[in-house]
Amino acid sequence: MWPGTEPIPREFFERTADLVARDLLGTVLVKDGLAGMIVETEAYLGLTDAAAHASRGLTKRTQVMFGPGGYAYVYLVYGMHECLNVVTGGPGLPHCVLIRALEPLAGLRAGCCNGPGKLTRAMGITREHYGADLCAGPLQLRRWIEPVPLQIEVTPRIGIKHNADWLMRFVVTRGQHARAGRFAG
DNA sequence: CAATAGATCATCT
DNA sequence: GATGATCTATTGC
Image 1 (cartoon, helix red, strand yellow):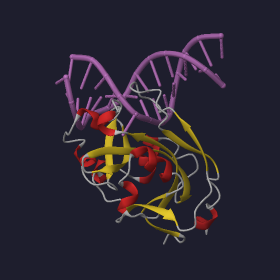
Image 2: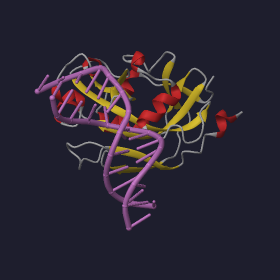
Image 3: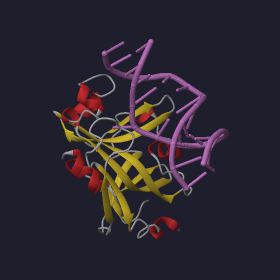
């Protein structure tokens, strides 16, 4: 399944969130028969970033971010939407990357994944996936064995109040369709 | 087409 | 008790 891709090693995630957020563009999120390519991410820089949940310290909700990278941080926003994040940084560096949009590759309808709350609903991701290992397992991130050329835009993050001028949002503006045919049939 | 309002609840103060 | 890393429908130009 998922030809042309491979699992992502944990070292990939154990870097600062800005680097991982950029490099996650073009990678593939898979679950059951569903797959989507990540085309929009945001970096949250832990204790040094007032916009990050982890900036207020270790709580029951944020604890997964204080552990090793490559695990899922899923939480509920606005009482109705779940958001999927990837833990990055590593122990002692509680960074994470919010997955904001996917380009459908398999089993997903067009327009279903252009938003952090929508993509979790489309893929059936809930708080039950809190702490799930994204390097291996049913909910998994995979990268292309052959690199994908992408044009990337960097902008401020959406919907936050603190550090609203930080350029920590990464968006694919070109190239996202380059590999879509691989999963088509 | 742009702006605004309402839904709805876990988490933290 | 207030708030929020959202989405959708509705209102107003």
